[in-house]
Image (cartoon, rainbow, N blue to C red):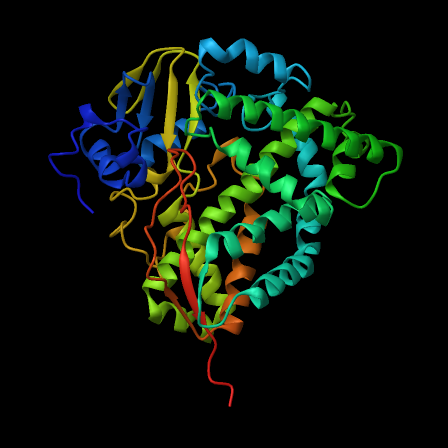
Length: 422
């Protein structure tokens, strides 16, 4: 995919509807002509080359994560009304995604005490059971909307299991997740912003009550691990309710929405490439891992992340003033021609696929990466175990969610067919 004269860097608008549907030519133009580019109309600097994105990620002192919420500011005319709703809940606490050291190290250490490799490994039987159940419910030989039927409920139910959310609250859990991500790199109207604020308070009240229960009666789950993490050495202070609620929101988005978008995109690529589906069926464990890793690079479900400069910053030949909002574009870095041969091709045999930045890097590298890889791999293995073929449905429009930060299909029609069992 090449940049054309129509993709002049001066005309780049990350929120233009056409750009949101296909950002890759724009990213290529930016990498080629202006790998650090100020979009005056949005007040943001975009960094698009892999080298410079990685450099900024490594310099957390200059490129601070204390940028506030990962969304556009609330418009002034509705700000007071939104804040009045938010006041009924807990104020936001910068923890993992939006904190710098030493606070960031404290919160990451506390989550790591609860979200251990052992804890994740113990989830595998539950994850496989969820995948088997969802695969068994898919129709044989008939079109099915795969995002709603599989790619969304799979990680949603996994992260619900991690947080010990009962089955009768799954619909609420999904609604909260959808609400929280609606403004991550996208926009809502006034009514949408008010509804989002109300959902946040509802979410907070539900989980605050759950945390109170765990403090009184700890269980073998992640919520209990978070409320008791301070007792596991290091003389740490207990996590407050507001901090844990913030961590849960980040787990909900990172552990649910991003995996949904990864699975949807991977199913699209498998539907386009029958021979790759055949390879997956022949060697499911090996090929599933390769396909997921290349999917992370090629699709980059988290397309970008904010930083804010604490002082004047030098990136390559470019200077960014202090106090500027910077967008590190992982989706562009992962398709940089300087790092990946034929970057716009989906190639699970790529030798350096793991050089991607889909999970970030440095001190803010995603703690949930092992879980995302595990559940996505199992999802493909179980699909391949039942269905001999997978192809794309005829009614697809391949429309993406309107966000420059989280990229994935709104819907995806596929037809899965079992083999002849005679």
